Length: 511
Image 1 (spheres, rainbow, N blue to C red):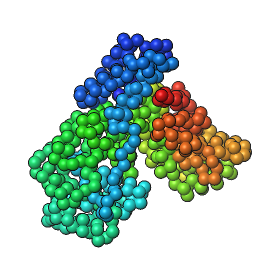
Image 2: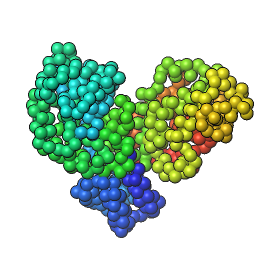
Image 3: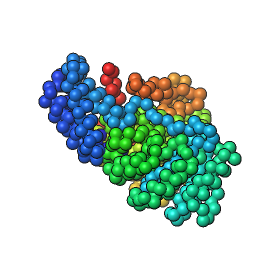
Image 4: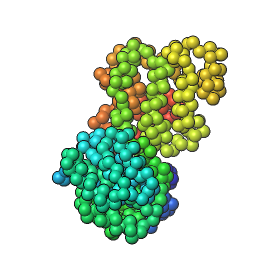
């Protein structure tokens, strides 16, 4: 997300950083490049003009001229402008405060991801807000649409309205309202039908359903990859339907990010959620501050910690803690670490949340550090017998050849995994001998990228300090926190990450 924009803006600010003073010419040149970068990212022209006017006025003001570090102040101004463009400091929560059932109406074009997003939202409300949720499909036109929602409902263990063939969208809405009320559901999610393009029939049907259901939230689900088409769709729906918020899907596949940056400014509607993946839990609350930080290459440590915390399996963590305390770390444990990284979005997903990593992409690609490496390493470990995973010393030359053939790799790839495991096992043994303090450091390194330090062992980044990253203070993780993450990632490549992992500067500069 935002790869191209991040690269362009980082280049602009790198050129002005370090200068003792900035002239109006310097600022004008920087703003011209920022303007081009935003246009190339497919941001709507009126939004770009307004943003540049805001940033230029602030960047040539007294605050910057008198600043000790003018370049940092300019970066801060762009950061503030991005936050304003994206909707302000505080995330806008989903409103479910209504007499049960609170109705959430999902609208959008066909193929935008409404049905999947309905299930993701239902899971989020159930898991985090402890709401009793029912889903109902009103899509009577698309083949198997109702069956798709029913299947997703079973997968996430959320109730769906039983299917009755031949009913209209209005009839289904009335039956869903009655069923949800009688069965004591807190929230009813209505998944409306879509069309390939906007038409009068679609708008009339959605408007009629809205009149009957009287939703507390009407969310437009839009595909980020459609760029400015998504912005036009949002405007058209909002003119006919009282929308309350936006959900952008496929945000992880949108390298430009123009739709996201334009939608809030063009429609005036808050972006409430981002869909970033195909899994049913891949729905994130939209936070303008954190998105702005990622655009400017500052990563999103808070999201990384939250993701790690959500993915931590408490029972497995406790079992791992007991093994580590004895100085034990076998190849099954290494496989578990790789699987956890995959659940968190893979190496690329994690690296995208780390500060300063965008500059290292080229070096990482040349070094072969990518998600395919994790799959390769998993395949190698899976090709071993249970005894070999528990006792790697059994692996002689003939066994390594067999494992390489089973995993479809070379013997040297098997050796790399064994070397990586040996290095990590040596660290575990030395730390186990080093007492509680060393065990805390080990727990930070192996406890889920900081989000899941081993139970009873401390370690991991200070949660309160990292949480501040999502607030106005933008507090820094310590050197130990970033080193723990770096060590964990470096282990995947069998050595140090190219160029090392840069620390997180104090960003944005305090006012």
